Image (cartoon, rainbow, N blue to C red):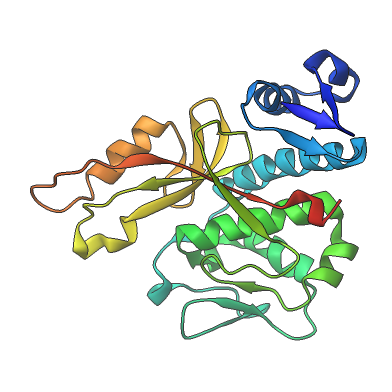
Length: 242
C-alpha cells in the first residue's frame, strides 16, 4: 500500500508518473504489498522511485564491468583513487572527488576485486550518485570508505523481515552448511531486480534457483541444510536524501 500525505494511492493515480516498465513494476509491487509505504509529499515518493530505478541501473552497470570477485584478504583497487587498507577496505585518497573514484570502478573494472558485501555497497553508492548528482554526492561523501557493510552517512540502511520484495531491495541468501574451505560463500547479498531476478557480485544476475544451486555446491561434505533465501529485506532510508 502507498500513502502520500495520509491518502491511500492506487496505481491509476500514478499513471502520469510511470513512464517505464521498471517504474510500473516497482509501484505495482508497492501497491500490492502488505507493507505501508508512507510519504509526506509526492516528491518523497518520486525520489524513492528514482533511487530504486537507479539501483537497478547501478547493479547492471557493475555486472557489466570487469570487476572481479575475491575475499577481503585479496581485495585490490585502483591506487590512483583509493588506498587499500589492511582489512581489505578501500579508502578514498585525499583531494580525490568521490564521484570520479566511484565511477572509476565501472570505467576500470579490471583494476578492482572485492567481496559481495562491498559489491552491494558500491551499487548503493552508484545509485546515490545517479540520483542526487555529482556535486551533492561529492559534498556528502568526501571521505568515502568501501568495506563490507560499513556505510558513510547519510547513506543509512534499515532492515525488516518479510518476503514481499520490491525491485531495488537488498535481500540475502544464506548457506549455513558452507564448506569451511570456501567460507566466503556462507551468504550472498543481492539486489532484487524483478520477478525472480537477483544481482549478486560473484554470481551475476540470476534466478533464485540458479543462485541456490550454486551455493549448494559450496557446502561441506554431508550437509544437512540447503541454501535458502532469507525473509529479510535491507534498504536505504531514502528520505535521508529527498
